[in-house]
Image 1 (tube, rainbow, N blue to C red):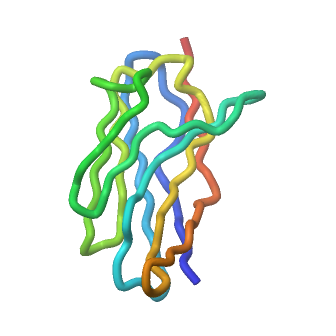
Image 2: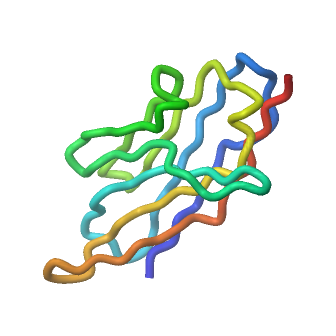
Image 3: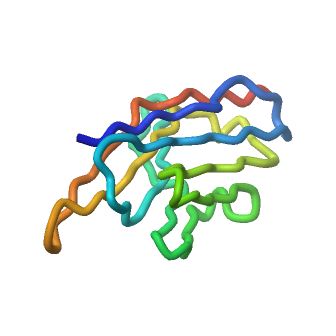
Length: 120
């Protein structure tokens, strides 16, 4: 079993910055893609940013140029640096990891979520 634990959320004023971290623990030999999703009140969960094991990244259009995703494979940790935050970035942010389970199969795991609130 794999556990994902997020940290780094909080309350920040518009224009400010926050850095989210997500550490994976358990019996892990490797992790495929890792990503950050968010869910605002009354809205569907959406992809914010993702990164492959090789370091390729993709971002939601709404965060391009403001957010940066990175990972430390040795620590099984993914980060999300969020700059120039806007009130519309307010949401619960969830970490996601795709972990190989044998052959071509993999399991998808979610963290418990961390609240990010941006005040205007």
